[in-house]
Length: 196
Image (cartoon, rainbow, N blue to C red):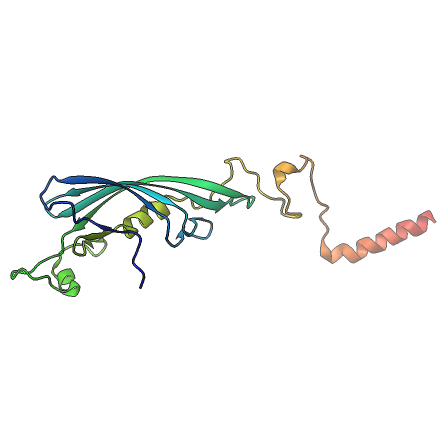
């Protein structure tokens, strides 16, 4: 299994509360982040300004994520780019230890916690923190659900599929009820016979 590009080693951060380090990261190899309508493409550069602080319970990671997402306008389907500039803060707890100083298995550690099931607790794995969850959360939760090329985008003509803003204001299509189409053809033939 390939190593996640979002794993970060905190080995040079002392485990004394109050210690802090800052880093600039540039992740260029990753899977797409987002959903079908708007996402950061695979291997699109993601810049992260990371600040890690040692606290009594673990490591507090905060940072700023910058990248560029590609989207499709929800009304006219035009390709658009969406700049991402989001901040995150996440606490990574030190691995729990039992009374003998040994690390219990993850299942028993979870059973000992009296936390709500809805609260996601993130633990360090040795000296490593996995930034994938916090970064994925901050990106996906802040992407627009219905991206627009501009707020007043008129969309497409439902009949011909052309962009409405490129069409004249009086653009219209003749609406013909398919049930009466045969009679319309008959009426045209009768009108032509009268003229002849």
